[in-house]
Image 1 (cartoon, rainbow, N blue to C red):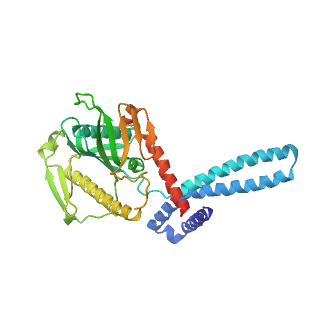
Image 2 (cartoon, one colour; image 1 turned 45 degrees about the vertical axis):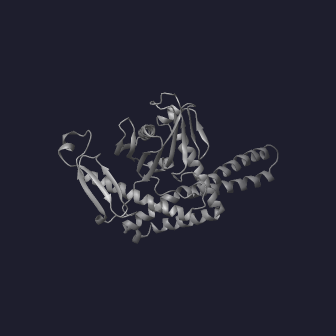
Image 3 (cartoon, helix red, strand yellow; image 1 turned 135 degrees about the vertical axis):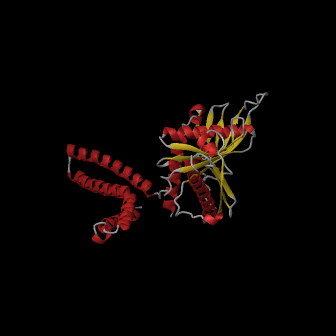
Length: 356
């Protein structure tokens, strides 16, 4: 591990030297790229330098303990224990910092919720999940916006798409991808029987145009009238945009914004994100076919979480974590699951790093 970190420190020092070069200072793009690279290394380099300082202090203290006697020797031994503990903490911190970060973590997200098995109850559960995520996003001072919705007419959704704008949104929402299952007595159930229904959640990071490009010729864009509330402006003008990506057949209709141009831009962004997700799923299948971990994979064939109303329990099956405060969870208190999933994900990546 220390050899890998020393390579990072060497590169960090080289970047700092380059950033004082007049030729680099005159090249804004090069300077910006180097500053970004340095920023990504800085925390690890600082931890390593503190580790080296503490290791040297520990060696000096051990040497002093061998030479001293009585009370001074006892003081030295006590200090050795504190330094060893500090050294161990710094080593764990460096291991954590060595885990590669997902470059998409800071991005905004698009989230799709689709009703699965269970008829009307599945649609109502989809609406419950939407509310849960809206509350969660608002609690973190992020901005959630519904972009497309297909309601069931009984308070549920066949499908709903929303965006969340906020720094780090993808780093949290990415663990929500998969099949969510609810077990409860539906309002329409006269016999009091417990039904099991499902809804699928897909989370996609908002992507830069450089990630995946779309040929405008491959898009079929139609302006339509918006439905639902929105004022006279939305009703008098065809401001909604229906966009079809012809090669893939992907389609989306957006009417959340007040202008056709804005709705077109949002629709194209969603198409891009969907195409990116499809491409990444292909790569994931090819590269990680033997990877068994369920943490953060977003495999939609697996039930990742169960919401059991009779027991007041929510269980995340990927990590075996249960909460018996279902009302709080369904009201947006999902950090306990996301925090645990993040830790499990980092531990898995660290283990893979050590194996390598």
